[in-house]
Amino acid sequence: MTVRLRVKELAEQRGFNISTLSRKSDVSQNTIRRLWHDPYRHVEISVLEKIARVLGIPTGDLLEDVPVDTKDK
Image (tube, rainbow, N blue to C red; front, side, top):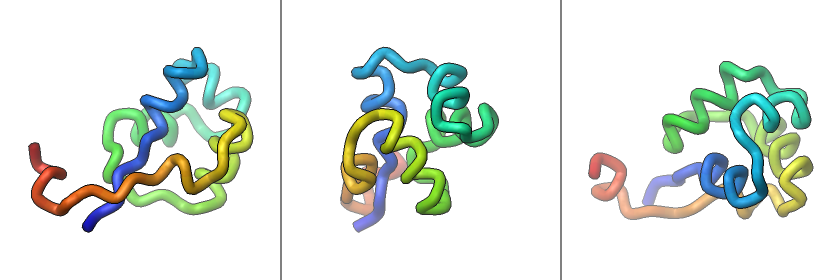
C-alpha cells in the first residue's frame, strides 16, 4: 500500500481553492499547489494538521491507502 493525499478533493468539497486554502491554513501557496497536483508527495505532518484544521476534519481524513499499482494510473 501507498498513501495518497486527499487535499484537493476535500478542499474543493468545502469551497476552497489553492490560494484560499493557503491563506487560511498559513501554508505556502507553493506547498498547497504541489500537494494539489501531486497527491503522492511527501509532506510533514504539521502541514497536514494545519490544512485539516482549516477544513474542519481530522488529519487522518486527508490520507487514503491505495494499492501501489494504482499510483501510476
